[in-house]
Structures are given as C-alpha cells and as structure tokens.
Image (cartoon, rainbow, N blue to C red; front, side):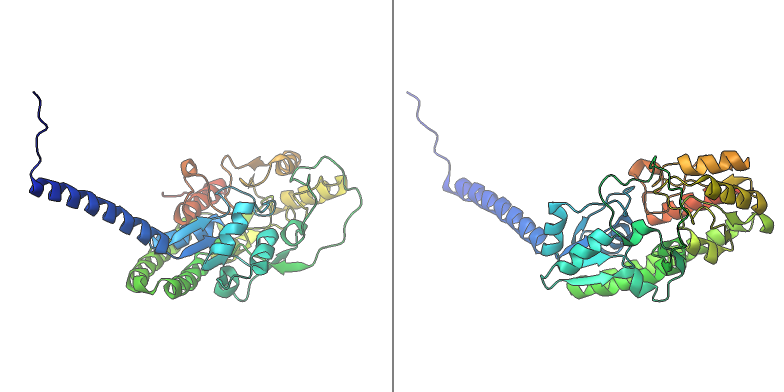
Length: 339
C-alpha cells in the first residue's frame, strides 16, 4: 500500500522561505519600478538626451517617435494621460510642436514643465515663419499639396528658430537644464546625473571639434547650404556655412508658382553650388524640381533636420545624427568626412 512520503518540517520551512523570498523580491522590484518618477519628453532629441543622463532611474515616456514630423503631429489620448501623470515634462518650446505645447500648458497636475530649448538658448536666431510651426492647419494639409498658390504671399515675419540642437554648443547647454530638473525629481541619483552629464558634455565637446575639422575640408567658396526647409541655420552659423534661404522662403506645404520657381532656380545658379540637400521629414518633389531646373544634384542621403532617425538609420542618437548630417553635407560640397 502506497503511503505518502512525509516531507521534513525543515524542508517545508526552507521551501516556504524560498517561495516567500521570491515573491518578496518580485514585490520589491515592482514597488521600485512604480516608485520611479514619471518623466515625459516630447520629442526624440530630448528623449535621447534625458535617457543618456537618467538611464533607468526614471520612468521615461517619449511622445514622438524618431522620424515623426512635429509640425503634423496629432495628440493621442495616451499622450495626454502621460502628461497628466508625469512629475516632469520636457518640451522644446518656441512653438516647435504647437499641439503638444498647448496640451502641456493646459495640464493642471502640478508637474514641472520645462521648455528646454528656450532656457538653453534664451536668445534664439530668427528664421522664416513657416505657418506649420506656429499655426494649426486643418486635416489634409501635408507637405506635398497639388494645388497652385498662384498669388504671391507677403513675406512672413521672422520667428524664433527652435532647431537649436544643430549647434552642439546649444545641446551642451541643454544638458545642464536636463540635469538640474532631473535632480529635482530624483535627488538620490544626483551624483550619477552629475557624472553622466560631465561625461556627455565632454563627448559633445569632442563632437563639436570633430565637426569643425570635417568642415575645414570644404573649400570656403563652396560652404553654401541649400535645403528644402529652413532648419539648418544654427548649424550654418556655428560651422561657417552660408544658408541660401531661397528654398526656405517657399513653404514646404504648397506648390510654388512659376515665378517662385524661377526666383529659386536663379538663386541656386548664382550660388555656384553643385549639390542641394533634401530632408528625411519632408517629401523631395519640391527640391527635385528646383535641382532639375538649376542643373544641380540632390545629395544621395537626406539630412535629419527635425530630430533622430529610426534605429536602423544610423542616426538614432544625437551624436550619430550630427555625424550623419555633417558627413552628408561635407561630402556633398566636395569635402572629405572621416567617420
């Protein structure tokens, strides 16, 4: 007759202890995860920099994915919930993404809201005021309309240029803003944040010097940037390029008139450049028309002007993005880029 084997009481105690210990360990891990302060970063640039400083010490939510156009971004219910629940909200400012900024300012949850670009660069450069930066358009307005705006528009007023990260020195200033506000919500990680920020600042200083060295390989008279969107002004100012604003003067949301095309083509020809640059965030039809009429080529690779790229793009961190853009520009204008 089979009789159940009696397990010694010591073994039962050990098994129970192990089980309870495992459960307790899981509970502690869950508690630690839920106790992390919630942080929202509105775009890929801010998200990447915050992640490099904070690592896993905060619960970080990134609203816009890499490659998304901030001018066309529409808020989702999940975005609003994340903003409402966050202890710290990091956004650009300078009306870079109007819909998101509006939602952030409307949130009344006592969170700290930081316009990082505005604090890091209180005296921004001015650029052409494309209406997709500062005004919300109705649905159906993309960057490649087929209707013809035959009537010439009046020149739009200059507005603050939000693309401050294209000058590495501005990004180094952003690090201080991020570190200071992360310390406020997670003081126990103060020393780690200070150490990581210092290391990152040193890395960006070397990156800045590297960019300058690559640009020196481009002949002085060839340092002219012609792009389909007025977003590279900070880069041009920092690294000695002249921005040909003719393309930037035409909104990327409309089809230019024949007169506008002629003005741009004449300006491109007069500049003497052989290469113009398209961007990942915008369709290439407009700049391809200009290039064909002016008998110049469009660079094979596109620039990341609105933020980072997807993981497989080779521009999925701030450092990689700046290196990518620099090599595209330098090689396109006849220089040599050492990766």
